[in-house]
Every structure is written in structure tokens, then in C-alpha cells.
Image (cartoon, rainbow, N blue to C red):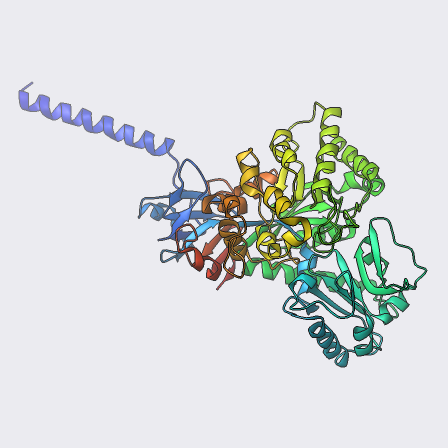
Length: 575
């Protein structure tokens, strides 16, 4: 065989070998998954340490198919019907998680009088009078959002800084009126509402609550903590079950719409009744629950023992509904002098606040939770409320050493004694916090508890994180607006309305605040395998923002807008 023929033969063999290798490689390497939606030309922050940023992300069905940094890599995921959105440099982050709010409360807040902008008691009386003119006699008038410490002046007359009902009752003689405090922990009622509820000077204070009274012992119309439950507000004749169901569905729809417009894809509903969960489950099964809910049941220990286990559910309706937690309240709110303190209030020395649920009842709830696979989340605001809750948790953990990775939560954890700060991480307890409370309450907090206690333990995010705590963030809506950008700004600036910073050494970095709104919220709900970061295989929940909140000037953060809210690969909100 000539040399030429040998070379040709060798080349033929070489071509055959490469052909075989190519065919084998094609068979072993599956074709790229075709995407239903691809986002390109953006800054995509994944909250994944392995690949922190990307320029495109491909979604297939309700999951993330691929994330890439190569400018043209997304093309291999394009097929018939693929929608491509050019982000034009906008910021895409994991779907925002509201880690503490009240879902029906959000919907309801959109249907009642908004009292948040009132500057005086007279303003509120005027709003109620205007509503009464447009309301049939006998119908209830509701409002929410007043805060006496945010008024321009103290009402006259007053008891403990709270107005008497006389002016309100005179302006609304034919309609019962109930006006809820911004915190949700106290209410103001007019004479008609008190009469319909049978409240007189002889009515006793309930456990964990207080009827504010004048010097003669008459109710002033202010009801603190559990005492607000004495006001019975059934409409005359009552609503039919069908009307009540329609009303509740409407509240869910309103809340869902508001969440999506704010970029919130998952909502931790901090305390819902069994009947509310029934509604959520029905709507989720119908595909009528666009926002993913992580629900904490609100019920007493006996009711939980009887009904609770049947309500535990994880990932119902395509991961739109999970119920695996219990919410209780051990104290009230600082604004209403209801937070349970170790020492008396500076501005009310006769009081250390209110214990709204007995220690024995809290222990019984803890036993139920740990024995039935429920996460326990306790509203604790004052330093004593937090200490008692930590003690109850620690006692339950010691009694059940086989139970691990429980991720029990303390909701708010606003005012802590220095000795209790390291106990959170030491016990594996999650402080679920709301930065916007810090900047909203900051102007009057030192008046309540004094500068020393404020400096040592008020909204001490940095101290908790330095001790090893994982902090998920929320707004406590409707106590505050469900506005993630305002909340994010509060976390990183701690700036008050007057421009001063409230103990700025406790600020979060922007990266920490983003984690608080994403992966930390997922961690607090045992959902890091599903959400909280943008990685292949996770749920395709994404929020697209108009500004890069990680790098833009700090003062521009609050004005950042939501451009797209994507849940399960579907664009459910587009600006």
C-alpha cells in the first residue's frame, strides 16, 4: 500500500472515530430544556454563593430550568412558544417573601377608613363623621391605622394619652364605630358600639386586656389588647353564609393583588383561624390563590389538640399552601403599653405591660407543637415577653431531645434584654423582624422605655446577627404598608422621617437585607429547597425591580418600583 493510500486510510478511520464519538456524546448529553419564559439582558442576583449573578434565566413550567452568564447561552432554551423578556438592565431577584403579615388583614385594610394620615384626634372624628353621612343608620363603620404618638398634639380631654369617646359619639350617633390602632393591639369605640356590646362601667377587664376608664370608672371608649374583643360587631340581621364567604374571598383577592403589585410572591400569614385555612385550601385548589401562603394557625392549645393535626399540610396545590406552624401572643404592643416588660414603662410607671396568654397555656401550646411536628411562632415584643418565650421554648426542647432543627420563631423580638440576645442563636430560634417598625416607632420608643433600654436592646438586628441569628424580614402588614422597598430602606438606613438614624450601628448591609427578604424567609419556613434563591430546579418565583437596590444611592431605594412579579413561571404583575 502506498504512503498516500495509508494516509487516506488513516484519515478515514479518524473521521469514523470522531463520528462515533459525536453520536455517542449527543446521545449521552440531553438537549437543553425548552423554556416557556426567558429573562435576558438584566442583572440577575441569585442569592446563590456558587453563581451570585447572571445575565439571563430560563423558566420551564413552574421551575427554573437554567441560569447563565454567557450573553447568548439562553438561545439553546428557545423553542416554539418561548416568551422572551428583555429586562433592559433591570434587577431581578428571587421572589420576595413577606415573612410576617396578616393576609386577610391586608385585604380588610383596603376596605376600611385609612387613619394612618390623621394628625389629630379631631381629624379622625371628622373622617368617621364623613363616613357616617354616607352609611345607613345602624351599619358599622370600621377604621384602622391611628397612633396617638404620631398625632401633632395630645387630645383634650384624655386618659393615659388616649381620647374620650364623647366627640366621636356625638359625630356618629346612629352608627356603631370601631377604630383599630395601627398596631392592631387596641381600639377606640363610640357609645353606640359599646351599647350594642353591652359594655358598661360594671364590665370587668378580661385577662390580658384593659378597658381604659375615666376618674368615675366609666369606659372612655379605649380598649387595650384582649379587651378589644369585648366589642361585638355583628351587623343587624347578620350576614348569610354565602355573603360571608363572598366577603372573605374578596379580601383574599384584594390581598393577593396588593402583594403581587409589591413584588411579594410568598406570604407568611401570622395567625389564621381554621375556617380561614379552609377558604385558602378551597381557593388554592381552584387556582384562585396566586400568592404562595405559609400559614401559622391561631388557636388555643385545646382546639389545636382536637383539630390541629388534620390541618397540617405542606405544598398543597402546586406549593401554593403550606400549614405547619402555630402562632400565639404572649404580650401586646409597645405603642399601647401592652408589651410585657421586666421593668415599668418610663411614661407609665404603674405598668409593666400585659401578659396576654398565660404561661401554662403557652407551655401547653409548645407541647402540642413539638409533639405534632408544628413550628411554634410567638408574638413577643417586650423584654420580659421575649425572656418568658425563650424559657418556654428551652423547656420544651430539653423535654424532647430527639426533636431537632425545629426552627421555632419569635415574631417581632423588638425589645430584648442583653442577656437574652445570644440565646436566640444558641437555641436555634429565629427572630422574625420588621425593620419598618424600627423607623416608624423610633421617635417615641425612648419615651416608652427610656434611652438606656432603647440603646441596649431595641431592634438590635446587628447584635442578633453577630450572635449567629438568621433574621427573616416582613412588614407586619396591615400594621405597616406591605412595601418591601420602604422596609428594605429601613433595614439598611434606620433613618427616621427627620433624617436622623436610629442607632445606626444596628443597620443591615444591603446584601443582608436582601437575604432577609429571600433565602432567610425560605429558611424560616423550611423551604430553602424550593425558593429563596434562583437556581435550576427551584420554583420560578422572581421579582424584577426598576433600580439596583444593592448599588443605587441609598435615598433612591424607597422610590424603586416593581416591574414584574413572576410566580411559578407566570407573569402575574407587570407595571
